[in-house]
Amino acid sequence: CDFPAPSVLVELDPATGSLKRTIGAVRDASGLYPIISSLTAQPGTGLLYAASVLTTSSIWTIDKSTALATRLSTAQGPGLAFGPDGTLYHSAGATLFILDPDTGVPVGFFPVSYSGADARIDGLAVRSDGTVFTTISRSFRPPRPCRTCPNPPPVLLPLALATIDLSTGMGIGILNEI
Image (tube, rainbow, N blue to C red; front, top):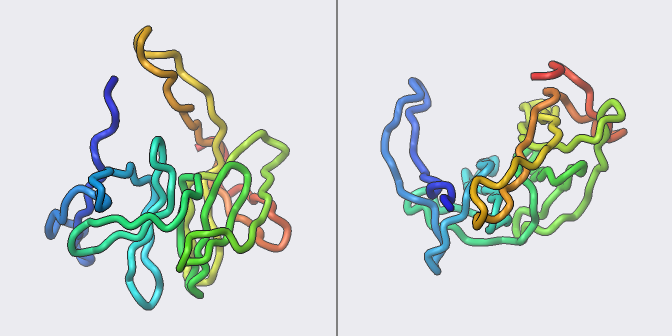
């Protein structure tokens, strides 16, 4: 069965968005290639943090010049974003975690709900005023592509683009059924 190609770190021109250079495939010192689902830079330092999915679900730091990944923790979930104050947010299922940026270990959490749907929070972004944005999804499991292949991972279907009210944990829809 085919596995996804390695994640590749590139540098883009901030003015044009065009490719400046390819740094290389993201890998750790043992040669493991994590499949990166989310990438964020720590305010003030520019240090890159990543969340990986599939067989290497973890939080990583990534060296910007070599693409070398260092595992911080085995926290699972696809979304990762820094707030302007340095808070590191991580999405996993229906929970928004706050992680310690030095260890990748959760130091707080917010259960998130969205209009009573059996939903999960996925992608994350944080605006300069601290507003947390997410995609809200539901999942289904597709059939196996072949008899000897393992069951494929669930496929996420986006339901909405939302903000998360950190005082209540409520997802507030901006755009439904995206």
